[in-house]
Length: 576
Image (tube, rainbow, N blue to C red; front, side):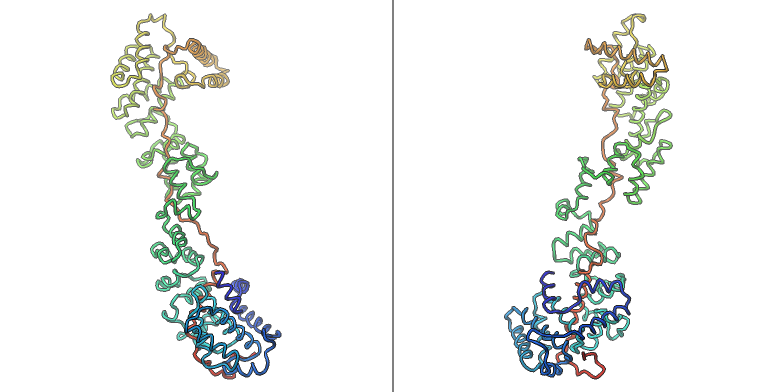
């Protein structure tokens, strides 16, 4: 655009960006009045050309070309000199056009003047042709030169904003072949803020050349969508990538997204893969990570960033927690398990036969009840686990180990031993507990130590390193309950003794593997939205974009440039 702007400035025509911004806030009548005022001010100003003031001879010689008045003559001669300065090519057509214009400047304007101007404009370099033609025809309009066909002149007045589009008759409206780039239709649709009036044919003509900001306007207006595949219509590779990301983001790979400075695809891919994601606090993936960790307090905040269908799914997760019952597709996503557990606290024994999620919850619930000293409730839950044949092998071993521990606490050593013996055939981890049971069976009842594992009495897994902190917490919490305080103190003494002797052989190991009780650390894939379109990067209704469309619409009027000026009558607006 730099060369085009320079050319426009050199030729001295067109409408400035400032004027365009003003017209956007005016009514049609105010625009017409402002245009007349500006024209009157120009006419009243002293006009001079590089060679000096316009003399009477110059005024007389230009009348035959339809140029009347000192201002009009000065502007036309400036325009012609600008065209000559830009005529760099040495092809025959441009040489003829340049020679003709020089002759008209040095002598009498000839009938070949307009064909010469047209020839130079048509032969201009593609990057400059539109800006040059728009600048020339703007001068033609503002100076009142009768160099266009009547229909072309009326269309130019409409494009320039001097008269409303409603003033065009049916015969004045351009046919498809007269508006090959769809620029006139687009300029009028933008002016009326009614982009949906563009036809499919006009859209196909407009998309390849329209400023990227205008293409974004068409997308936001719902006129242009992925079905049109606008990225295939643009010549610039960067714009192709941009439009692909705007309308078909799923077709945008990570490398292409990075080239656009768009981080969302890479962040989404990393989140799905379980890789660390450095998301801004409060962003979508930050909140998704937090609910993955079971933080329920961010659910409302997350809903505000999610599409409607995922908001409804998230609400199903919350509603299911009221009864501990969800549709099968909810627990099917293992990434939701931590959130579900954070929302739901079982009040009764959980049936593990309902599925893998419920089986794990049942195992965790049984362990929690054992740590809380709720032996009766724990027994009811463990019974459901050992009675269910479909429990995974690692969970079955833990369930039978809990069953044996509860039997040990009831001093039912034979039942505890038989329970573990069946597990020992396939899982060697219970051998230490089996050995403990054998020793205890061979010891007189009155000589046996208290059977409870002191770590479990403090509510911790076997050999937990955090037992001292937990003991202090229990002491504070149970200071008014002498029995509970005594139990905590007993656990402390037993653990200290084991640490001094480095002998934990009298402690029943539970759980066999703490990992068996852990919830999966996976991302909730069913809550990750589809990749959203890349946000718009252009400015809505930018002045430069509107000017580019207007210039293209004006340039398309070039074929209406007459080969000879019409003979103006007394009603024609060509005097100054």
